[in-house]
Structures are given as structure tokens and as C-alpha cells.
Image (cartoon, helix red, strand yellow):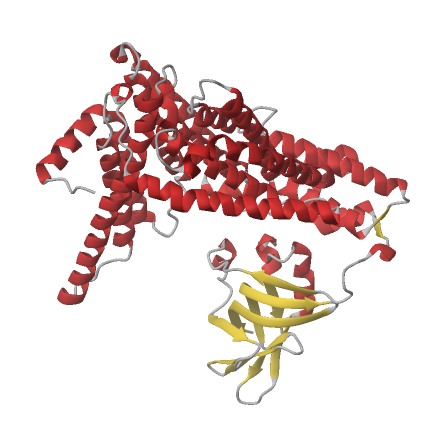
Length: 598
């Protein structure tokens, strides 16, 4: 790798800005905007402006690809309007993305973000060749992308390390306090501006005219001694596994689908690398890679389809299974194209992936809509079967019904089950709604009580002994902590079952009795019990909110008690306990205790 001179760097930087002004202005604005958020809102960096941040991240690759595409048109100057179309689409994306606190409403938002991000990077891989094709020019273009990525990451990484070491030196030698956020801001500057600028400065402008192939020895070594041996290893593992399931006559595990897909992608990467020189190198493994790898991949694709279709048949379609089956179908199409097509234009690989990525993100055929409909149909089939058996379900059926309800609740789509259950499921939501839980908490325990489904005990396969761990994460910033005007004393409790668990507050002793599951407030002088918080019933009540107790409404995290001597309010901040069958074992309590003498 040749290190450029200062003049070369400045010339390349100026040329890059002239060539990609919109992209670099986008990157500069986005970087300084994020730096600003860290400076003035570092604790809630992603809370208020997540829609802007995600749009800025997605926009970089789309704007780069758009510039590459426009440059290859006959009249680039008259085609600048395409950038306005892309900006309008990015504006629509900004409108679509919600604020951060709403991402718990549905994982679909983040799914779509990653799909649009992947689609943008795929667009860069073929944008200059969308309307034209040259095998050698395409290979050189992909090589330029790889080189630019390595160079930009290397140089921006070196700059970042140097700058943070300089800050650390100033902090240590001159006793100048450097805020921790400065290191994060420097990272964003090096990644968002320096890295992007170096990346764009390394691209030749006349992409389609660059047809001379320079195949370095390092690439031959990489393919011949690392990548192809890895392919052979994966082929051996998968064929051995195929032999095992044939001998034992069992269906393949779903996990094998991911390995077949990974092997396919590794093979396509090798094919791209060796494509222009495959027949010219004196290497048997490289010369024979095509077509033998693709012939050997055909039986493994049969294995892939059997594995994923088995999971879909048993449990229906989810987003993950949708993407696996989509990639499996795409894989078969690419295999057929590479084996049967005369042209074998490798741009077909990223273009077809790009189309699949976009199609799977929107429309009634999208991963989200198909998965939702599939899970509703699965629930309908299972629920009808249970009703026909006098409302009695096997353990597996009940687990599946609960799993589907959880799936739809994550996406706030439980109302899709109203017609099946003949219940208004949204009516089972907690009426307390706050900034973090706009839809309220769905009380699933009441739903199952209303459905009155009985468990067939003869089908139970689980051990009679269950050990479930319940946990409440930090809730220190919840609004209920402000409602303390009636109290005049405060104690922060951090009590563990296996440590000393007595806290002294003036003339009071606060004692956690872990065996009895109670918190008592005693007089330090007389040892008399002034007030008692029984915790066992509260812990039992919290188990209905699943093992992540953060789903519980805030009112459920507060205990109030009063005696002649004292009034108290106990607010849980963190909490963990185990439930072994009907026995509760308390592990630790972190809480805010507010007191008032009566």
C-alpha cells in the first residue's frame, strides 16, 4: 500500500468534493449533527432525533450509487434530477421512521432500516453497470471498491488512534480534564467525514473505460490457499451431514440452511475474484472451480429447502424464515443462471439481491405482512384444534399459542386475533400509558384466563421442577419518583441476599429479611418494628409480566405502607428473584425509600 503525499491528499480531496458534493455535504452535516447530539444530549443520544440519524446513515450509500449511475449516462448534467428523486425518497424515509421511544412498538422499523441500508450498499455494487456491461471494467470497479474500503478504514483508523492518544497525553501530562464524549465525537468525525472522503477520493471517474486487468499475486494466494480450502471444508461438512440424515432417515435441522447460504455466498465471492483470469492462471483448483462448485451446490440446495420448509410447515413463516426462503429461491436462480447462461454477467448477483431486498421490505408480499398473516393462520389452526378438543391443549399447542401471541404483541397486531378468540384483545391493555409504553401493557395472563384453555397434563414433557429468573432493570428516571412531596426523608436501598442487608438512617434501621421476603423499618434504639413491607405477594404478582419485569406498569413497582409511627413509599429501581415452582427466592433489591414521621 503506497502512502500518498500531502499534496496528493489535498488534490484528491478537492476532486472528490467536486465529484460528490451532495454526498460529502450529506456526510458532513450528518456527522456534525451527531456530534452535536452527543455534546448536548449524550445520555439520550438516540431518543429524540433517531429518525434523522437513521435517514442520514441510509442516505450515504444511496447518494454514492446515484452519482456513479448518473456519470455513466450519455448526458450526466441533464440527469441531475435523479438526485432530487433520491432525496425525496430519503425524505419519505425520514417521515416513516418513528422516534426512538416508539421502536419497542414494533421491530419492523429496524428491520426496514437494515433492508434499505443493505439495498443502498448493493446499489453501489452495480450502479455504473445498470445500463451497460463490460466484464473487465466491472471486475476493476469491484476491486476499486475493495481497495477504497481498506484504504479509508486504515487511514481514518490511524488518524483516530493518533488523536485519542494525543487527548490521553494532554489529559495525563497537563491535568486537563478531557470529557469522555470527546472520544466518541472524534470517532464519528473520523468515520463519517474522513473515512467517507478518503473512500470517495479513490474511485476512477471513467469506470467503464478501465478494462485492463491487474491481478495481484496476493489475490491468487487468498483464493488458492484460503478461500477455496474453506469452501472444500464446508462442502465436506455439509455432505457428511447429508449422509448422516440419509442413514438415520431424519429431517435436517433448520440451522443447516444458514450454512448452505453462507457457503453459496463464499463461492460467489470467489467467482467474482477469479472471473476474468480463471482460464489463464496455472492453477487446477482455480481453473476447475467453475463449474464443479455449482454442481456440488445443487444437492445442498435441496437440503436447504427441506430444512427451511420443515420449519415453515411446523411453525409458519416469520421474518427470518421469509428471508431464508427468499435467499434459497434466489440461490437456485443464480445457480441456474451461472450454469446455463452464456454471458454470465456477474452484475446479476447484486442486482437480483437488490430487487429481493426492496421487494421484501414493502407491499403485501413483504416479509412483515406475509409473516403476520402466516402467524395469524397458525394461531387460527391451533386454536380451532384446541376448541374441538373441549378447550384442552397439549403443552406444545399451548406454548405455540403463547408464542404467536407474543409475536403479534411485539408488532402491536394482537387485534388480528379478535375474530378468532372472540375477544377484544386490545381491551386487555393496562390503561396507564406513558412516554415509554404508548400502547400500554398487554395483560396476557387475563387473556388466557378468559380463553379458559385447559392443559392436558398427560402431554407434559417438561420437568415438574422449574426455575425461572425474573429481573427488573434500572427505572430510576421514571416520572413517579417526582411524586414525593408528602415525604421528608429518603434512603437509597442496595440490598443483596448474600451480603449485609441492614441500612441505618438516623434513628431507623432498614432490614431486608430475604427468607421471609419482607422489608422492615425498625427503631434503632428499641428494636421495635415500626413498619413492614411484605414482598412475597408483590413478587408473585410481578411474575405475570413475564421475566422482564420492565413490562410492568409503573404503579406495580411501588409499595406504600403506613403505621402510627411512620408512612413510607418504596419504589423498585432494580429487582431480581427466582421462582422455583411455588417458592420465590429473592436475590437483590435496589429501591428508593421515602419516609415521613406521623
